[in-house]
Image (tube, rainbow, N blue to C red; front, side, top):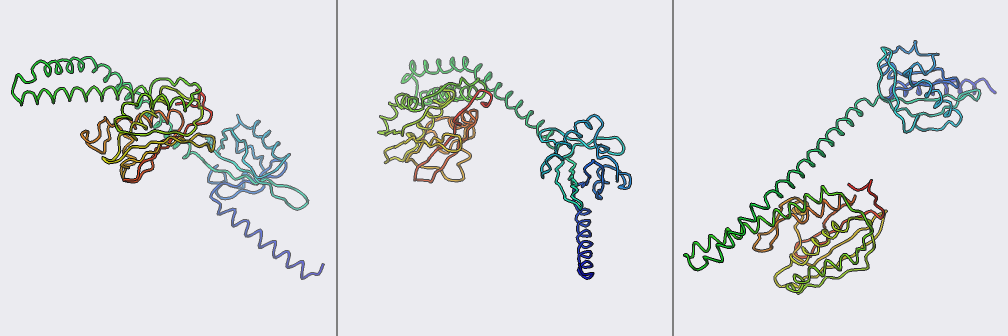
Length: 382
């Protein structure tokens, strides 16, 4: 080979090595390169920062010097398996890894490995080492917050159940006696008295509705799901039968596609369809005949059910608000109700590992869509 060509190759090699060293030193993670025997050949500046060693102390040492003693035997076996089939991949997938600093302290790490061919057919192993202490602390804090939130929600639901349950009896007495006053003294007192008694009777009735719906909401979140195979077609037919008086009064029509069987709690799923179909019948314009249609499709391991109506629709800015407790977009005089029905639907669907959403345009109807997994077991249900 001509001398000039050899010189060019040496120059290229020097430039490549210089570039490699530059990339190595600028890497944000620790980089440790070991030979087939597991001896450290090269480290970068970040490795010195992570482990507290000057690089001169690491070169030529077994890489296990950076591993806690209790994990060294396992690390050696991981390394041996990797060397038998070297590919770019994480080390110790599914297990927690720790690094050992010079001062004896440990810290959690992520390690990814890559093979690097060297002259004379030798293969070096490049280890990229990342300190994940901050992520671990953030994850632990997130778990604590989630646990606190779950505990708070459970306590709140229990409080709502107990409070509303205990209110039933005194409220029943108030409602009974105000109704008795209305029957016995209507027309015997002045018009103001009749009006005042009417307000009391109506207030007691609405309070009973709120308490009953609040109890239903609480039960939807606290009672264990009774999972069975539910024929949704038959369930919808029973709901339509229950709503027959309201359908007849509004002159409405309720139709459905062929609907599948799913795994779920029949009682709670019936509440979902009953609320959504009843809303489709109720929220219609004054000169409009309500039409409600129930359809389905299957995709990505889930059934998606749609309840579509031709009613008054919902403006975009209110489409998230409607799923909150006691949220109403209209007066009770226009459309009666407590504003809890959609919150109950959302809770039930989420307990079945599904999602509930709405698509609507004012004056052009509304479609509520919710998903249910094709297969659901007790471990997955909330």
